[in-house]
Image (cartoon, rainbow, N blue to C red; front, side, top):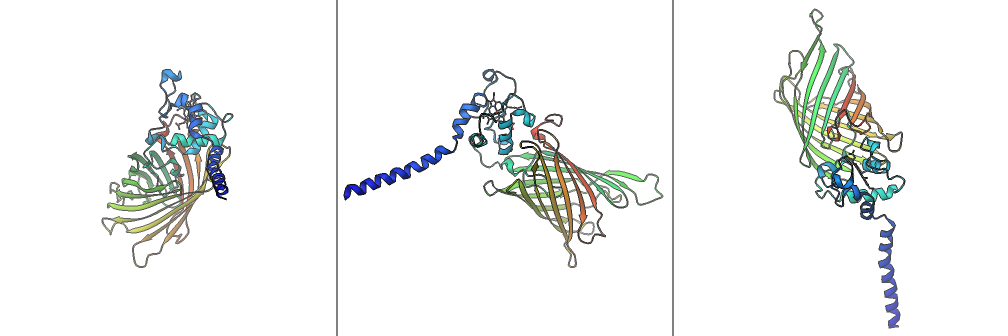
Length: 370
Ligand code: HEC
Protein backbone atom coordinates (compact mmCIF):
# COMPACT_ATOMS: atom_id res chain seq x y z
CA UNK A 1 0.00 0.00 0.00
CA UNK A 2 2.65 2.40 1.12
CA UNK A 3 4.86 2.00 -1.96
CA UNK A 4 1.83 2.64 -4.22
CA UNK A 5 1.32 6.06 -2.63
CA UNK A 6 4.97 6.84 -3.28
CA UNK A 7 4.65 5.67 -6.84
CA UNK A 8 1.64 7.95 -7.46
CA UNK A 9 3.35 10.85 -5.78
CA UNK A 10 6.44 10.35 -7.93
CA UNK A 11 4.36 10.06 -11.10
CA UNK A 12 2.33 13.19 -10.41
CA UNK A 13 5.22 15.34 -9.31
CA UNK A 14 7.12 14.23 -12.41
CA UNK A 15 4.20 15.20 -14.59
CA UNK A 16 3.66 18.56 -12.86
CA UNK A 17 7.32 19.45 -13.12
CA UNK A 18 7.57 18.45 -16.77
CA UNK A 19 4.53 20.46 -17.97
CA UNK A 20 6.00 23.94 -17.38
CA UNK A 21 9.32 22.92 -18.94
CA UNK A 22 7.47 21.57 -21.97
CA UNK A 23 5.49 24.81 -22.26
CA UNK A 24 8.62 26.92 -21.94
CA UNK A 25 10.18 24.82 -24.69
CA UNK A 26 7.32 25.63 -27.08
CA UNK A 27 7.85 29.41 -26.96
CA UNK A 28 11.04 30.61 -28.64
CA UNK A 29 14.01 31.48 -26.45
CA UNK A 30 14.55 35.18 -27.19
CA UNK A 31 17.95 35.38 -25.56
CA UNK A 32 19.30 32.39 -27.54
CA UNK A 33 17.94 33.85 -30.81
CA UNK A 34 19.45 37.23 -30.04
CA UNK A 35 22.88 35.80 -29.17
CA UNK A 36 22.89 33.66 -32.32
CA UNK A 37 21.43 36.05 -34.92
CA UNK A 38 21.91 39.60 -33.63
CA UNK A 39 24.79 39.78 -31.15
CA UNK A 40 27.53 39.60 -33.84
CA UNK A 41 26.63 43.19 -34.73
CA UNK A 42 24.51 44.50 -31.86
CA UNK A 43 26.84 43.12 -29.17
CA UNK A 44 26.08 40.67 -26.33
CA UNK A 45 24.61 43.53 -24.25
CA UNK A 46 22.91 45.42 -27.06
CA UNK A 47 25.31 48.34 -27.06
CA UNK A 48 26.62 47.62 -30.58
CA UNK A 49 29.99 46.04 -31.39
CA UNK A 50 32.89 48.33 -32.31
CA UNK A 51 33.38 49.27 -35.96
CA UNK A 52 36.60 47.30 -36.43
CA UNK A 53 34.84 44.12 -35.21
CA UNK A 54 31.76 44.38 -37.45
CA UNK A 55 33.71 45.66 -40.45
CA UNK A 56 31.27 48.31 -41.65
CA UNK A 57 30.78 52.05 -41.14
CA UNK A 58 27.04 52.23 -40.37
CA UNK A 59 26.64 53.21 -36.70
CA UNK A 60 24.90 50.64 -34.52
CA UNK A 61 22.12 51.68 -32.13
CA UNK A 62 22.58 51.30 -28.36
CA UNK A 63 19.62 49.24 -27.12
CA UNK A 64 20.69 49.80 -23.50
CA UNK A 65 20.10 53.56 -23.87
CA UNK A 66 16.51 53.95 -22.58
CA UNK A 67 16.18 57.43 -24.07
CA UNK A 68 16.54 55.83 -27.51
CA UNK A 69 15.15 52.32 -27.01
CA UNK A 70 11.98 53.16 -25.05
CA UNK A 71 10.63 55.35 -27.86
CA UNK A 72 10.52 52.67 -30.51
CA UNK A 73 7.41 50.47 -30.53
CA UNK A 74 7.99 46.72 -30.94
CA UNK A 75 5.99 46.68 -34.18
CA UNK A 76 8.51 49.05 -35.84
CA UNK A 77 11.50 47.08 -34.65
CA UNK A 78 9.97 43.79 -35.78
CA UNK A 79 9.34 45.39 -39.19
CA UNK A 80 13.03 46.39 -39.40
CA UNK A 81 14.25 42.94 -38.31
CA UNK A 82 11.85 41.15 -40.67
CA UNK A 83 12.35 43.31 -43.76
CA UNK A 84 15.82 44.79 -43.15
CA UNK A 85 16.97 48.37 -42.49
CA UNK A 86 15.69 49.92 -45.76
CA UNK A 87 12.03 49.28 -44.81
CA UNK A 88 12.39 52.31 -42.47
CA UNK A 89 15.08 53.98 -44.58
CA UNK A 90 17.88 52.66 -42.34
CA UNK A 91 21.17 51.18 -43.53
CA UNK A 92 21.06 47.95 -45.61
CA UNK A 93 23.77 46.69 -43.21
CA UNK A 94 20.81 45.78 -41.00
CA UNK A 95 19.84 42.48 -42.70
CA UNK A 96 16.33 41.09 -43.29
CA UNK A 97 15.54 38.06 -41.13
CA UNK A 98 12.08 37.39 -42.59
CA UNK A 99 13.24 34.20 -44.28
CA UNK A 100 15.33 32.89 -41.40
CA UNK A 101 13.20 33.72 -38.35
CA UNK A 102 9.43 33.68 -37.75
CA UNK A 103 7.59 36.72 -36.41
CA UNK A 104 7.19 34.83 -33.09
CA UNK A 105 10.97 34.33 -32.93
CA UNK A 106 11.63 37.97 -33.77
CA UNK A 107 9.13 39.00 -31.08
CA UNK A 108 11.02 36.82 -28.58
CA UNK A 109 14.32 38.44 -29.66
CA UNK A 110 12.70 41.88 -29.17
CA UNK A 111 11.68 40.92 -25.63
CA UNK A 112 15.32 40.18 -24.96
CA UNK A 113 16.40 43.49 -26.56
CA UNK A 114 13.89 45.22 -24.22
CA UNK A 115 15.75 43.83 -21.20
CA UNK A 116 18.84 45.95 -22.08
CA UNK A 117 17.13 49.17 -20.91
CA UNK A 118 16.76 48.58 -17.19
CA UNK A 119 15.06 51.85 -16.18
CA UNK A 120 11.32 51.21 -16.46
CA UNK A 121 10.30 54.83 -15.85
CA UNK A 122 10.52 55.60 -19.60
CA UNK A 123 7.05 55.26 -21.15
CA UNK A 124 7.12 53.01 -24.21
CA UNK A 125 6.81 54.26 -27.79
CA UNK A 126 3.61 52.21 -28.22
CA UNK A 127 1.91 55.13 -26.39
CA UNK A 128 2.98 57.56 -29.08
CA UNK A 129 -0.46 57.43 -30.69
CA UNK A 130 -1.29 59.38 -33.86
CA UNK A 131 -1.65 63.07 -33.05
CA UNK A 132 -5.16 64.48 -33.41
CA UNK A 133 -5.80 68.08 -34.57
CA UNK A 134 -6.86 69.51 -31.20
CA UNK A 135 -6.61 66.83 -28.48
CA UNK A 136 -3.11 66.84 -26.97
CA UNK A 137 -1.20 63.55 -26.77
CA UNK A 138 -0.34 62.11 -23.37
CA UNK A 139 3.04 60.87 -24.67
CA UNK A 140 6.00 63.26 -24.26
CA UNK A 141 7.48 64.08 -27.65
CA UNK A 142 10.41 65.50 -29.55
CA UNK A 143 8.46 67.08 -32.36
CA UNK A 144 8.01 70.13 -34.50
CA UNK A 145 4.46 70.72 -35.72
CA UNK A 146 3.26 73.34 -38.17
CA UNK A 147 -0.49 73.81 -37.82
CA UNK A 148 -2.51 75.67 -40.45
CA UNK A 149 -6.15 76.70 -40.07
CA UNK A 150 -8.32 78.41 -42.67
CA UNK A 151 -11.71 79.48 -41.32
CA UNK A 152 -14.59 79.25 -43.80
CA UNK A 153 -16.04 82.73 -43.14
CA UNK A 154 -15.59 86.48 -43.42
CA UNK A 155 -13.20 88.22 -43.04
CA UNK A 156 -10.65 85.78 -44.49
CA UNK A 157 -7.78 84.53 -42.36
CA UNK A 158 -4.84 82.16 -42.60
CA UNK A 159 -3.81 81.03 -39.13
CA UNK A 160 -0.50 79.29 -38.44
CA UNK A 161 1.11 77.92 -35.36
CA UNK A 162 4.61 76.57 -35.04
CA UNK A 163 4.94 74.19 -32.10
CA UNK A 164 8.24 72.91 -30.75
CA UNK A 165 8.22 70.03 -28.27
CA UNK A 166 11.27 68.77 -26.40
CA UNK A 167 11.48 65.90 -23.96
CA UNK A 168 13.57 66.04 -20.83
CA UNK A 169 14.16 63.21 -18.37
CA UNK A 170 12.16 60.03 -18.71
CA UNK A 171 8.68 61.51 -18.37
CA UNK A 172 8.68 65.26 -19.07
CA UNK A 173 8.28 67.54 -22.05
CA UNK A 174 8.60 71.28 -22.66
CA UNK A 175 6.58 73.01 -25.34
CA UNK A 176 6.59 76.40 -26.99
CA UNK A 177 3.95 77.44 -29.53
CA UNK A 178 4.21 80.58 -31.67
CA UNK A 179 1.18 81.63 -33.75
CA UNK A 180 1.75 83.69 -36.90
CA UNK A 181 -1.49 84.80 -38.53
CA UNK A 182 -2.64 86.58 -41.67
CA UNK A 183 -6.00 88.32 -41.32
CA UNK A 184 -8.07 90.38 -43.69
CA UNK A 185 -9.33 93.58 -42.10
CA UNK A 186 -13.07 94.08 -41.83
CA UNK A 187 -12.55 97.74 -42.79
CA UNK A 188 -13.17 98.06 -46.58
CA UNK A 189 -11.52 101.53 -46.65
CA UNK A 190 -8.15 100.27 -45.39
CA UNK A 191 -5.21 100.53 -47.87
CA UNK A 192 -3.84 97.13 -47.13
CA UNK A 193 -6.56 94.51 -46.76
CA UNK A 194 -4.27 91.90 -45.16
CA UNK A 195 -2.36 92.17 -41.92
CA UNK A 196 0.04 89.70 -40.44
CA UNK A 197 1.29 89.37 -36.92
CA UNK A 198 2.56 87.11 -34.17
CA UNK A 199 -0.17 85.95 -31.80
CA UNK A 200 -0.07 84.92 -28.16
CA UNK A 201 2.98 82.75 -27.47
CA UNK A 202 2.23 79.69 -25.36
CA UNK A 203 4.59 77.81 -23.02
CA UNK A 204 3.74 74.38 -21.71
CA UNK A 205 5.01 71.60 -19.45
CA UNK A 206 3.84 68.00 -19.65
CA UNK A 207 4.54 65.15 -17.27
CA UNK A 208 3.54 61.50 -17.54
CA UNK A 209 1.72 60.63 -14.31
CA UNK A 210 0.85 57.02 -15.05
CA UNK A 211 1.54 54.44 -17.75
CA UNK A 212 0.91 50.72 -17.98
CA UNK A 213 1.70 48.94 -21.23
CA UNK A 214 -0.30 45.84 -20.30
CA UNK A 215 -3.44 47.93 -19.79
CA UNK A 216 -2.45 50.10 -22.74
CA UNK A 217 -3.16 53.27 -20.73
CA UNK A 218 -1.17 56.48 -20.22
CA UNK A 219 -2.15 59.65 -18.31
CA UNK A 220 -0.28 62.97 -18.27
CA UNK A 221 -0.71 66.30 -16.55
CA UNK A 222 -0.21 69.48 -18.59
CA UNK A 223 0.24 73.08 -17.43
CA UNK A 224 0.36 75.90 -19.99
CA UNK A 225 0.47 79.66 -20.02
CA UNK A 226 -0.48 81.84 -22.97
CA UNK A 227 1.29 85.23 -22.89
CA UNK A 228 -0.31 88.40 -24.31
CA UNK A 229 2.35 88.88 -27.00
CA UNK A 230 -0.15 89.33 -29.85
CA UNK A 231 -1.65 92.67 -30.88
CA UNK A 232 -5.11 92.70 -29.32
CA UNK A 233 -6.48 95.63 -31.36
CA UNK A 234 -5.80 93.84 -34.69
CA UNK A 235 -7.26 90.56 -33.44
CA UNK A 236 -3.95 88.72 -33.02
CA UNK A 237 -4.07 88.26 -29.25
CA UNK A 238 -6.38 87.99 -26.25
CA UNK A 239 -4.73 90.91 -24.44
CA UNK A 240 -4.32 88.97 -21.23
CA UNK A 241 -2.32 86.07 -19.82
CA UNK A 242 -4.29 82.81 -19.85
CA UNK A 243 -3.37 79.87 -17.63
CA UNK A 244 -4.43 76.38 -18.61
CA UNK A 245 -4.30 73.01 -16.89
CA UNK A 246 -5.38 69.68 -18.30
CA UNK A 247 -5.15 65.91 -18.03
CA UNK A 248 -4.44 63.91 -21.18
CA UNK A 249 -5.28 60.22 -21.52
CA UNK A 250 -4.28 57.72 -24.19
CA UNK A 251 -5.68 54.23 -24.57
CA UNK A 252 -4.32 51.61 -26.95
CA UNK A 253 -7.18 49.45 -28.28
CA UNK A 254 -7.12 46.18 -30.22
CA UNK A 255 -6.64 46.11 -34.03
CA UNK A 256 -4.43 49.25 -34.24
CA UNK A 257 -7.24 51.40 -32.78
CA UNK A 258 -6.94 53.99 -30.06
CA UNK A 259 -8.76 56.54 -27.97
CA UNK A 260 -7.36 59.82 -26.66
CA UNK A 261 -8.99 62.30 -24.32
CA UNK A 262 -8.12 65.63 -22.73
CA UNK A 263 -10.02 67.42 -19.98
CA UNK A 264 -8.93 70.91 -19.00
CA UNK A 265 -9.70 74.50 -18.15
CA UNK A 266 -8.47 77.96 -19.13
CA UNK A 267 -8.38 80.85 -16.68
CA UNK A 268 -7.57 84.37 -17.93
CA UNK A 269 -5.79 86.82 -15.64
CA UNK A 270 -8.24 89.52 -16.75
CA UNK A 271 -11.80 88.15 -16.96
CA UNK A 272 -12.98 91.12 -19.08
CA UNK A 273 -10.67 90.18 -21.96
CA UNK A 274 -11.19 86.42 -22.20
CA UNK A 275 -13.57 83.83 -20.79
CA UNK A 276 -12.85 81.27 -18.16
CA UNK A 277 -13.77 78.00 -19.80
CA UNK A 278 -13.57 74.24 -19.49
CA UNK A 279 -13.09 71.79 -22.34
CA UNK A 280 -13.32 68.11 -23.13
CA UNK A 281 -11.55 66.80 -26.24
CA UNK A 282 -11.79 63.24 -27.52
CA UNK A 283 -10.30 61.48 -30.53
CA UNK A 284 -10.78 57.90 -31.70
CA UNK A 285 -9.16 56.32 -34.71
CA UNK A 286 -7.61 53.31 -36.32
CA UNK A 287 -4.49 52.80 -38.42
CA UNK A 288 -4.71 50.86 -41.67
CA UNK A 289 -1.75 49.39 -43.55
CA UNK A 290 -1.98 49.02 -47.31
CA UNK A 291 1.15 46.85 -47.24
CA UNK A 292 2.03 44.65 -44.28
CA UNK A 293 5.23 46.47 -43.23
CA UNK A 294 4.35 49.79 -44.86
CA UNK A 295 3.04 53.16 -43.76
CA UNK A 296 -0.13 53.62 -41.74
CA UNK A 297 -3.17 55.62 -42.88
CA UNK A 298 -5.08 56.81 -39.86
CA UNK A 299 -8.61 58.17 -40.07
CA UNK A 300 -9.79 59.76 -36.82
CA UNK A 301 -12.91 61.41 -35.50
CA UNK A 302 -12.46 64.11 -32.93
CA UNK A 303 -15.15 65.69 -30.75
CA UNK A 304 -14.46 68.92 -28.89
CA UNK A 305 -16.75 70.36 -26.21
CA UNK A 306 -16.19 73.83 -24.73
CA UNK A 307 -18.14 75.47 -21.97
CA UNK A 308 -17.77 78.96 -20.61
CA UNK A 309 -17.82 79.25 -16.84
CA UNK A 310 -21.00 81.36 -16.65
CA UNK A 311 -24.42 80.45 -15.19
CA UNK A 312 -26.42 80.41 -18.47
CA UNK A 313 -23.59 79.12 -20.68
CA UNK A 314 -24.24 76.29 -23.14
CA UNK A 315 -21.74 73.64 -24.11
CA UNK A 316 -20.48 74.10 -27.67
CA UNK A 317 -19.72 70.85 -29.54
CA UNK A 318 -17.53 70.61 -32.64
CA UNK A 319 -16.65 67.55 -34.72
CA UNK A 320 -13.38 67.14 -36.66
CA UNK A 321 -13.22 64.22 -39.08
CA UNK A 322 -9.59 63.91 -40.21
CA UNK A 323 -6.98 61.69 -41.85
CA UNK A 324 -3.37 61.35 -40.84
CA UNK A 325 -0.99 60.27 -43.62
CA UNK A 326 2.56 59.03 -43.11
CA UNK A 327 4.79 60.85 -45.59
CA UNK A 328 8.29 59.50 -44.95
CA UNK A 329 9.62 55.97 -45.10
CA UNK A 330 11.30 56.53 -41.70
CA UNK A 331 7.81 57.35 -40.39
CA UNK A 332 8.95 60.63 -38.89
CA UNK A 333 7.08 63.11 -41.13
CA UNK A 334 3.29 63.08 -41.09
CA UNK A 335 0.46 65.11 -42.54
CA UNK A 336 -3.03 65.47 -41.14
CA UNK A 337 -5.98 67.02 -42.97
CA UNK A 338 -9.27 67.72 -41.21
CA UNK A 339 -12.44 69.74 -41.29
CA UNK A 340 -13.87 71.28 -38.13
CA UNK A 341 -17.58 71.82 -38.03
CA UNK A 342 -19.90 73.06 -35.27
CA UNK A 343 -22.51 70.59 -34.05
CA UNK A 344 -24.28 73.08 -31.74
CA UNK A 345 -24.91 76.87 -32.10
CA UNK A 346 -23.39 76.63 -35.56
CA UNK A 347 -24.20 80.24 -36.46
CA UNK A 348 -21.58 81.47 -33.96
CA UNK A 349 -18.52 79.49 -35.10
CA UNK A 350 -17.15 79.19 -38.63
CA UNK A 351 -16.19 75.82 -40.03
CA UNK A 352 -12.42 75.44 -40.38
CA UNK A 353 -10.07 73.63 -42.73
CA UNK A 354 -7.26 72.19 -40.60
CA UNK A 355 -3.88 70.86 -41.69
CA UNK A 356 -0.72 70.00 -39.81
CA UNK A 357 2.73 68.82 -40.79
CA UNK A 358 4.58 66.94 -38.08
CA UNK A 359 8.26 66.14 -37.89
CA UNK A 360 9.48 63.76 -35.21
CA UNK A 361 13.00 65.21 -35.15
CA UNK A 362 14.49 62.60 -32.84
CA UNK A 363 14.10 60.00 -35.61
CA UNK A 364 16.24 61.92 -38.08
CA UNK A 365 16.68 65.16 -40.04
CA UNK A 366 13.88 66.31 -42.34
CA UNK A 367 16.03 65.53 -45.37
CA UNK A 368 16.70 61.92 -44.32
CA UNK A 369 14.53 58.82 -44.30
CA UNK A 370 12.53 59.17 -47.54
C1 HEC B 1 25.23 42.41 -39.94
C2 HEC B 1 25.02 43.21 -38.77
C3 HEC B 1 23.67 43.14 -38.09
C4 HEC B 1 23.00 42.05 -37.62
C5 HEC B 1 23.43 40.59 -37.65
C6 HEC B 1 21.77 42.54 -37.01
N1 HEC B 1 21.71 43.90 -37.12
FE1 HEC B 1 20.20 45.09 -36.49
N2 HEC B 1 21.16 46.73 -37.22
C7 HEC B 1 22.37 46.72 -37.84
C8 HEC B 1 22.73 48.09 -38.22
C9 HEC B 1 24.01 48.52 -38.93
C10 HEC B 1 21.70 48.91 -37.78
C11 HEC B 1 21.61 50.43 -37.89
C12 HEC B 1 20.94 50.86 -39.15
C13 HEC B 1 20.83 52.38 -39.27
O1 HEC B 1 20.71 53.06 -38.24
O2 HEC B 1 20.86 52.87 -40.42
C14 HEC B 1 20.71 48.02 -37.16
C15 HEC B 1 19.52 48.46 -36.62
C16 HEC B 1 18.58 47.64 -36.02
C17 HEC B 1 17.31 48.08 -35.52
C18 HEC B 1 16.75 49.47 -35.68
C19 HEC B 1 16.93 50.38 -34.51
C20 HEC B 1 16.33 51.75 -34.77
O3 HEC B 1 17.11 52.66 -35.06
O4 HEC B 1 15.12 51.92 -34.69
C21 HEC B 1 16.70 46.99 -34.97
C22 HEC B 1 15.37 46.94 -34.28
C23 HEC B 1 17.59 45.87 -35.14
N3 HEC B 1 18.72 46.29 -35.79
C24 HEC B 1 17.29 44.60 -34.72
C25 HEC B 1 18.08 43.48 -35.00
C26 HEC B 1 17.73 42.14 -34.61
C27 HEC B 1 16.51 41.75 -33.83
C28 HEC B 1 18.71 41.34 -35.07
C29 HEC B 1 18.80 39.83 -34.96
C30 HEC B 1 17.64 39.06 -35.32
C31 HEC B 1 19.68 42.18 -35.77
N4 HEC B 1 19.25 43.47 -35.68
C32 HEC B 1 20.82 41.72 -36.39
C33 HEC B 1 23.16 45.63 -38.10
C34 HEC B 1 22.84 44.31 -37.79
